[in-house]
Length: 234
Image (tube, rainbow, N blue to C red; front, side):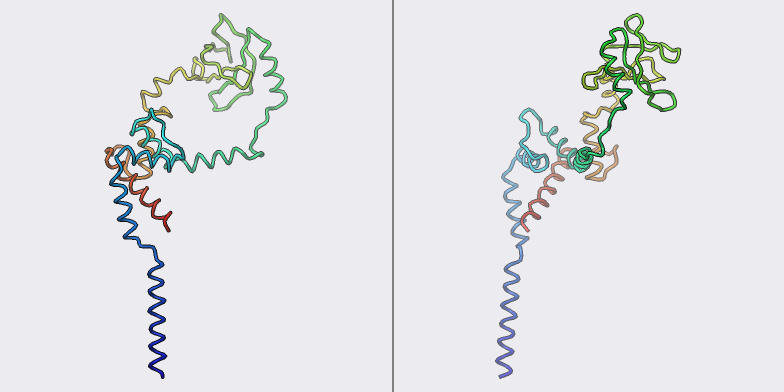
């Protein structure tokens, strides 16, 4: 009788073990299936698929593969910070209110044709309260006994109010007129070179000076995609 019970117990154990094995995800088959599917895609299709996953929309027709990869890598590097910042700025307590004294000054600036509202950044690293300054010779203001240039191309808008931002150490106002100079030295925020270097440093862990070819970038993308497919299948 003991042998009969033992045999039944062994059979039940084997059966339960077999059921557990059959219920486990077949990782090898999933990997083979994935590689088989990937082999059907062209390089452009792989990049397009990755773009949809990371960016959440179809890629723009006018963008090259390099530009698409740059956006993918940019999202991988800065995406979580961008989302966190947006959520942070939505909080009501983060809203800034202008002092009532400044509001009156802003309103009066609209009525003064020969005056300009100026935000002055002094040499101490302070932003001085905004002030109205008279304009001389159509292109000059005097601040702290020093002449500074006024250029309509450098005007900044705060809603319906126009102002000029001036640094104490520079006679020329703060503006976007030096865009080409900024881009030339590689500090432009829309520079492809900046996006590639920043994103690759985070993902690949390579120093800025080490070149990374396009094939390596594609391989990294495929690995990331494989990981996504694997975890979604669990």
